[in-house]
Image (tube, rainbow, N blue to C red; front, side):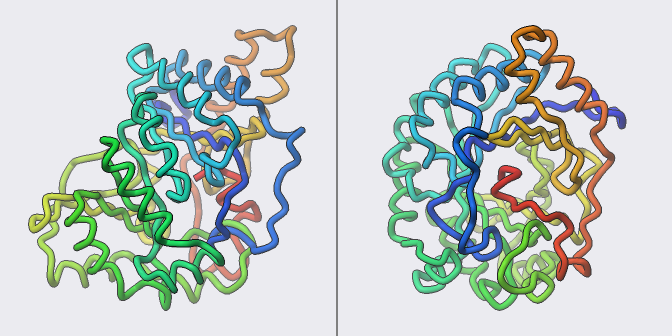
Length: 328
């Protein structure tokens, strides 16, 4: 699949649920209203949709949420998708908050998952509880260590937030190095109404990198996972530091991904509202597989050149939908 700007679309991020067992302050409102089950695709429908994308050239699938592992029987979907590895699919990965990892880590490895991204913005228990509104960091750390023990490579994702965790990145990089984890820092994105002001939270990663470089040797590398992060080898630890900078350094020029929500809505760009409904053709028996694939092609033909996030607009979100709705 080739978009209008000549980019091959080979990466699909799939939100299997909009629900989450945490309420991170930069991601969700505390009193979130979640989708009724009637609007959410079944696991079998998600599997069929992913299969269509794989048959059309997608080589990497990432399951997201909300929190993907809170979806009932989600391991059946993961097992089915894992069976496609080596048959059109190169990689199946997962982004998780880690709360359910201790229970599922070994099953994920058996299914063919080899890498997981764990969202963890602080190593301080009190800060973690405050940032997630009710989370227990001990449960998340148990999940992370269980993932490591199961053979999964762990990457820690942390959103950089001024006044929240800006004094922790040195410690986090050291902790990740100790355990062999990569660390990826992410600028806050203006998605969804939240309590507080994102402009006040915004911390440019150029500043963070400059501060970290005073202690750590950060060597640029061409390493990529197919996502938007720019990576640096950390000489002292042998691990990597990734930076995702949607506001200070637009990463759209090499975009190879689209996002599928749990309702069957396909967003061709994280930062644009244009979307395609794939649930209708998926459930229309008259269209069949060919009709579904044509709907996908038509959507890819509308993929925009890039987003237009600007932090000055953060007081009024660029988009009303929350990241948990879009998917990871």
